[in-house]
Image (cartoon, rainbow, N blue to C red):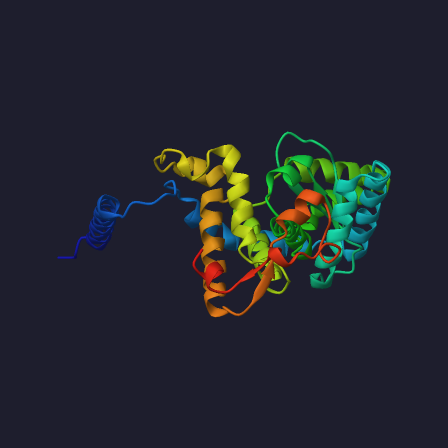
Length: 315
């Protein structure tokens, strides 16, 4: 008499059901016994980790397309010409941004003439990275942040998007599709800008840009804690940590482009505190007065803006 061929399949299904039930029970137990936290419940971090290999595959696929750094530089030159033509002569905000960029350019490896442009009021504190070394900054961002170090952290994040290829990878398919047509570079630039200003990066790309900004701060003269404080400042208009904790929403956490601001704030604040504990003798610059007066370091170098030691490690 032959054995029932369905036996092994049924056994596997039973074991799978048992494992799923055990996993669900473990999750329920952890949920009941978890300590209180000021952060809202979120599945953003696991979704970010889940999206990392997908992001990597997408990046490798896009970089196999024969549109290279020469086209990116040409595209960046077109962007620069467009935004330079819209600048207001003598604008102190633009002058301030121009004074800050020399602090970031030494950290860049790609051969672009990096420049940040003030684009006026856009409805929210924000910044954008365009291919070829162009960064756009809203007026609200300058008003929302609390120090020059925080602004440098924000610029470094956008610099990371360009240096890591996120900006150009987003428009590479579009450039290839239109390159054989009759459109001029200016028309291509218009389409690329619309795409980049309307479309968000993936959580994985945002995390990479965050890490890039953190590493840049560590290798600069600025306080590495500025990145966490920048996220705190940007989180305030959306409710900050004082809002009531919301339940886990898998669909919300899957579809949102950026990791939650509170999680980013906590992560990089902890990293900065750990760095300060390991470097208690370091002195770093904050620049609260610099941002208010729109005068960059080293043009305005104030002794009271240098911080360090045990006070920073304990923050």
